[in-house]
Image (cartoon, rainbow, N blue to C red):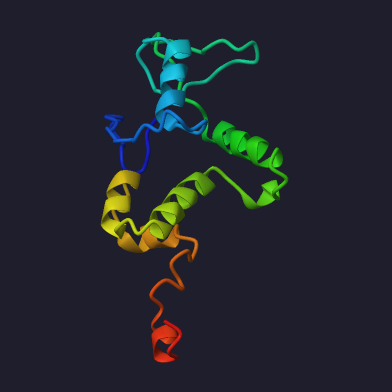
Amino acid sequence: MTSKTDQERRGEEVGVQAVPASPLCAVTAVLAWLGARGDTPGPLFCRIDRGGHLTYGVDGRLRPIDSKTVARLVKRVIAGTGLAEAEFSAHSLRAGMMTAADRKGVPLEAAMQHGRWKDARTARGYRRHSSLWQGNFTGKLLGDE
């Protein structure tokens, strides 16, 4: 599967911190997925048919998951939370990562490198105004900080 930043399908390594005590640990989830997926060549996230079987292309490689499937999965998870699923998409995952990084004070450049953004203006567009009030100069002007 190609992307805007990886037309040659080379892939990239991205460091993800393990948090084994968390039920949301990405490393634990990926390791469990790899145990189920096996070591067949192909994309990390691949298509699964209605019967729960991995699907392969004519080249014998696993077929990549479709972006529409990711969008449906996000909406399915959101529906279980009681939030308005229409307000969420697959891009909500990127926006959530950038917003959380911003709230934790992660420098924009570090978040851009992890999320593979090349343009700072585009990356800033993913922040959901989380830091709008942090260190806001009007508070200092009015003596509130």
